Amino acid sequence: MSQQPSFIDTQYQFAQAIRDPVNNPAPDNIEQRRMAIYQELFYNNIEGFIANGFPVLREIFSDDAWDKMIRDFIIKHHCKTPLFHEIAREFLAYLDNERDCATDPVFMKELAHYEWVELALSVSDADVQHFQPELGQDSLSVKLVSSPVAWTLPYHYPVHLIGPDFLPDQASEQPVFLLIYRNSDDGVTFLELNPVSARLIELLNDGLTGQLAATQIAQELQHPSADVVIAGARSLIEDWLQRNILQLA
Image (cartoon, rainbow, N blue to C red; front, side):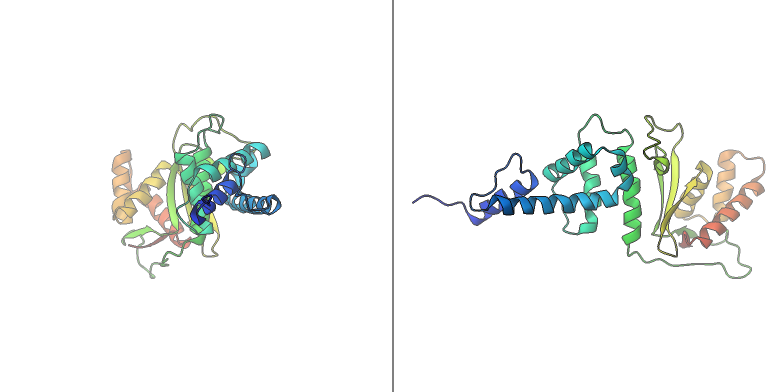
């Protein structure tokens, strides 16, 4: 009596034929027409989620190069979550750990991360607390931190400007600081920070009040007038509070 493949073996063979149909034959008892439907549906679903999650990345790739990358992702990467909205995070892991293509844009990983952040913030269920100082309360006197849906991120490339008409081939001379946040209308947007404003929000998150943070920055800059730095910090903090970027520590 010939030994039939086990049900588990058949499942593995079926899955491999879906992920990599060129190099893996389908189980013998599955009609090729039906197998082709499974393969097409699977690929289109994965490709659609990634294209929607990384629209700029999709736009700068040719159709052929994009299809090859998606197929490579499907073949090489083993996702660790069944949640559809986490496919974008899994794609980032693939770019970091399994992607190996010398012709990829030098900024690709950072651009993908920037695009993923928008999705991550839009679906976050973090507890957001809105805070506005009481009348007469100095915004520099309280301890404030970034909202859990406001992330300050440094990049080597100006990822917020990249598109078909702007494809940088080398890193910026200075880090690009972006404050990406979800606003009160649940839209995700960003502010470009300079090194001083990025340092201010870093110090706030380290537990300093705005007053102490501004004073420390003035010392670090060796600024001739600490009052000017403190006034600038107050203006920034009040703007960030209006945007719900900051909350009480």
